[in-house]
Image 1: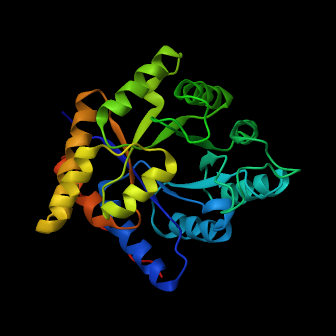
Image 2: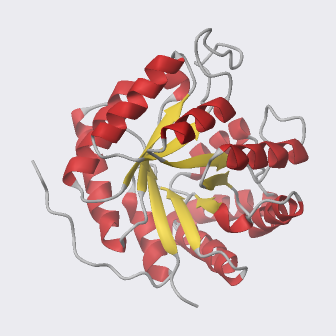
Length: 289
């Protein structure tokens, strides 16, 4: 079994200390020759400018293929496409196109009066420019706002039909979750080779469990029990590495050849999983001031 192709997701730094941590994370993972790395937006577009700065810095200094997250939230069509044009002029031609989370406390997504009504409209507009490789989100478990799992599958098909090149899934805790989703996508006529599973090595179990509850990811009882026991014994990192490696291996046995890691700007667990999967390191980045 050959090693998978990998990609890594980072979030933008909001302090000088966080900027150094992001660069250390990039340096620690770049030797695995990722297909691309991506930088997220905050809820409500709150990190829009920071994301743009981080994307520009990584694109200029890292030598990696960088994908910028772009959302429909709190911006006009002209503003959003202007940001996309800025990315293109800077040499960034990979975009993760998302509807985006509404501002906290807003009660739900409301399109800007002059903005994109949904991710479908954003994807189509980006496709029309002919400038970008477009990636989108996918949900192996029902999105909290979706009517059903099947509705999620049908929406994903519409996004791919609108011009998206690849779908990156939300994280999940059991491989069968992904395989059931992949089967449903195949039944809907989706080319499942375009779906890349998202992997979250568990750095902090309690924090991950809270986040999972917010985004509709089911937490199996056995996993909670395992981390409670591991915490008592001080073996959380060992358990997290073993579980993520086992999940990735099972996905690869099931025909998956690409993995997308949510790093949370903490490289150690992701690095250990990549090494366990047989990925070779190829030197380090040069620290460019």
